[in-house]
Image (tube, rainbow, N blue to C red):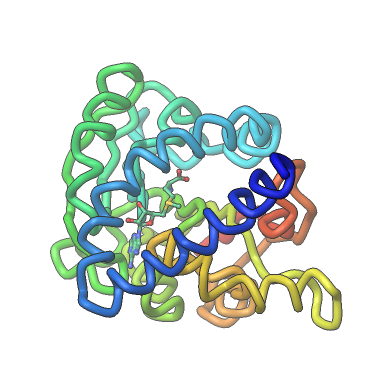
Length: 245
Ligand SMILES: C[S@@+](CC[C@H](N)C(=O)[O-])C[C@H]1O[C@@H](n2cnc3c(N)ncnc32)[C@H](O)[C@@H]1O
């Protein structure tokens, strides 16, 4: 009997939570609440993500300082969240943050205070689809990690990234993506995405921006698919690499 109650609670609780999320969403209350909760969830998730992905990120960013000009490096980080990549940037880095969720404020400030290698030059509280205050060719580097899964328009974000990079500037990307077509994991991702997306601020499990990046006109693209060493099967398929303007 006790086991039966335990099993019912185990199965019933997530279903009740999902129903609650959909109910709140239908009356427009979930998104504002989710925006407030997200920075706390992200702080927790990005800590364990960085631990598991440390070697991947170290390899990704190993040549980032080569993009600096006269010892100064200007990075635009889109969807910066709480600054989970600041520890990988070289001394003297100025970061322009494009982050539409203002509730990341205290997490971002905390990261900036922990990592003196980084100073925040500006915070644009906006999506990266349009960054009109940034001039063409004004950034040495653009960084994008775990962002394109949740943006409104991938093509606009990548075009804007390409526009603000100086010639020779580099776009660094690390994203979870759709599993290979025809795989059972892709079916599972398709099944789970509506719930996942409701809980994680619009994050979609079935996108793959690899082709969008190939098409925008970078002179050199070196981005590969790989299976990330993560516990969560659904987000193991990843892309990582860089593209040069
Ligand atoms: C999963 S978090 C990743 C945060 C951080 N990049 C990291 O690696 O930990 C996704 C971030 O993208 C931001 N975001 C959502 N839509 C965006 C958009 N259109 N442009 C830029 N950032 C966006 C979210 O607010 C959130 O901070």
